[in-house]
Amino acid sequence: MKRILVSGGAGQIGSELIPALRERYGADNVVCADIKIPKGPLANEGPFVQLNCLDETGVRETIKKFNIGTIYHLPALLSATAEKSPQKAWDINMNGLIIALEAARESKCSIFVPSSIAAFGPTTPRVKTPQDTIQRPQTIYGITKVAGELLCDYYFMKWGVDARGVRYPGIISYKTLPGGGTTDYAVDIFYGAIKEKRYECFLREDTRLDMMYMPDAVKAAISLMEADPSKLIHRNAFNITAMSFTPKELANEIRKHIPDFVITYSVDPLRQSIADTWPESLDDTCAREEWGWCPDYDISQMTQDMIKNLREKLL
Ligand code: NAD
Image (cartoon, rainbow, N blue to C red; front, side, top):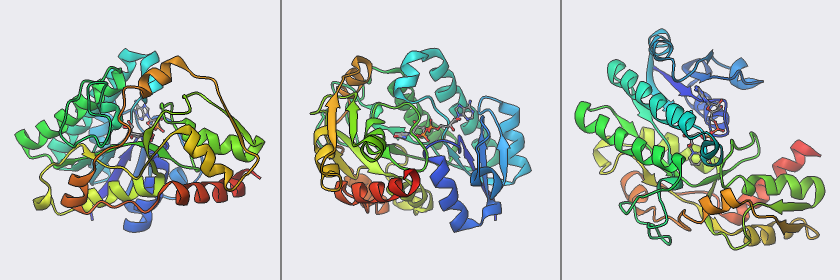
């Protein structure tokens, strides 16, 4: 079989997507690539290549060397980090994507490119945000995500490149820490709750955002790439969601397991201003209808599983 390349594979999503893909398709068939060298199984249990996604020749050579048929393109600067270095974010998020799309076109690869709820902005309807709606984001991260969505559509329309993608909400996981996004509080809070029974939140208590547990994020990527293309009316940027909550509601859910958990708030103006422009909840009907999207975890199942696994990891 043709192999799979996961570029930016050592980050929060890649470090769980790669083991799932290796389990499904065989460890030798899934190549992890990243600018940094990961510790542990990502580099040991299957092929690993240290690769900058901006290195056009390196990307092409890796695709040829490993006979790649599918690319999961994950390198990006995330929302809060990108806002501190907008030009660098544009470079990695856009030029890295164009290089990957060109390589996919040349080598006839399918390519998965994740977008984000950050692709929306303050003029987007915030509740049950439709699949096709106003997109005027005010962050550099969001701007690169909208441009990326359009570029993926363009490569399909113009050259038939099998580009597919979802708009991920904030992703919650316990294996790898998140990479500098606005929804990171929803992971940090569990570390605080388990280690110290307290957490100081950088978003206001009533900030409602869409979230998803990592097993669902991994399932979404794999199911979309395995979906019957003739059923896809949209191909890229599918709205997907699993749960929508505020920091206060998540703290209440955690208190069901850790009754003396205390949450306090010290609002970070940058991340709060970003969160205030994002949707509260997405309408993911198109993903459900076109490729059978259905999440397995709600807030209570996610909280229970996070606490169980983080207790084993940290205590
Ligand atoms: P992350 O920051 O955890 O991981 C990104 C990885 O890319 C890192 O391992 C980093 O070393 C690597 N990278 C950075 N620059 C690189 C370069 N020049 N060349 C090669 N690799 C490079 O991010 P993530 O959370 O795993 O996100 C993956 C994708 O999913 C991104 O496109 C992100 O925008 C999107 N997304 C993530 C979330 C989330 O909550 N995690 C939500 C929505 C969308």
